[in-house]
Amino acid sequence: MASDTYEILQEILKTGEVNRWNYPEYVRDVRPAKNPSSTKIIIAFENDDDFLETLGVEDDNDKYVWAKFAHQYEYDYYDSDRYTDDWDEGYVLDGLSEENLQKVDYILKIIEPQLTINVNDDGVRRQVAKVLVNKFPREADEITYEYGYENQQCIARAVKEELLSETKNPFLRFGIVEKDWGWRFETTVSILVNWYRTLKAEDEDIKGLLKRLIQRYQPNTNRGDWYELEYSVWCNDYDKDAFNYEAGKILDKLISDLKETMSENENYEDYLKMLDVVSDLGGFNRWIVIPKEDRRIRFLSIDSETNLLKFQITVKGGDYGKTETRSVKTLDDLYTTLNHPELFEHLKKTIQNIL
Image 1 (spheres, rainbow, N blue to C red):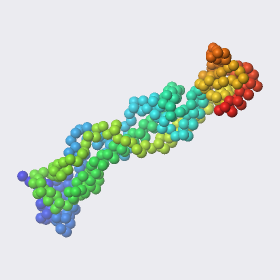
Image 2 (image 1 turned 90 degrees about the vertical axis):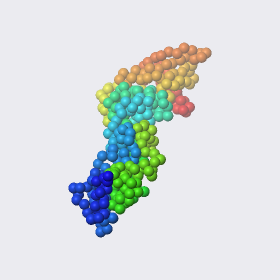
Image 3 (image 1 turned 135 degrees about the vertical axis):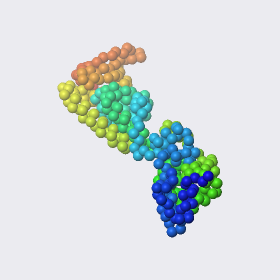
Image 4 (image 1 turned 60 degrees about the vertical axis):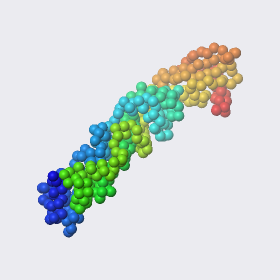
């Protein structure tokens, strides 16, 4: 028995017109022409599942991916656990621009000067990330969110591009032209009637006809299996500039707040001077030989609130003898440890020449 769709197409061929209230399912509009066989038929899939099923995509997981990505202009899903792990591993810091890395270094100079950012060292990245999230959890979460947001947008674009590549204009070879991806298509009465007769599919509606066309003429076309796309696509247009713009604003605000807090600390200027001395001598966590003395020194840490500078010092003798852990709070005490201020100046100049 012929379907309503086929009978209406036959009516158009004979009379050149049809009452719009009689349009069958999937026919959105009929546009008459002088020659009835050239009458334009506008096909529309109001339900995504109907379109996908014409292409042989039946799996609910694939339909879920389509619904999630195909028509999204902005992807609003955010996997907080995934990107929290990325922060902990230092991957978020690895995405910072050179300018923003300098801001991180400035922050470290204030709160943890024995650390300096090195994105090429996985261990250092993780250590810096841990320090920052412990000291500034809100700001770390904000930067992580911006990183994750841009990454998710990139993933969404990549998934959508893959969906598009598999489903773009799928009926073109049959004379049915896509006007809006996955939704609206245009053809003529004569083309549809010809395919109905060729396939002996007069009992099918438009969806059934298109499905049979795909099954017969595109049996080996690979469509579907999209459920893992979100985790397997290559994201090649990550917007690093957008991420760094937002991250930069967060870091600028953090630095401003830190400066305001530190300005209230009467020991802050002395703290900076102490840092400069340590930096001039060679920095933290490395053994520094004191010229013309039987000593080596290694600076361990400094407290920005108390100015307490901790270090190890050895007296040369055999294998440099025993190591002592000491601490000082003032430059004078440090100079005394190094024997004389004059010796310190000599040491600084000598080490600068070595470095």
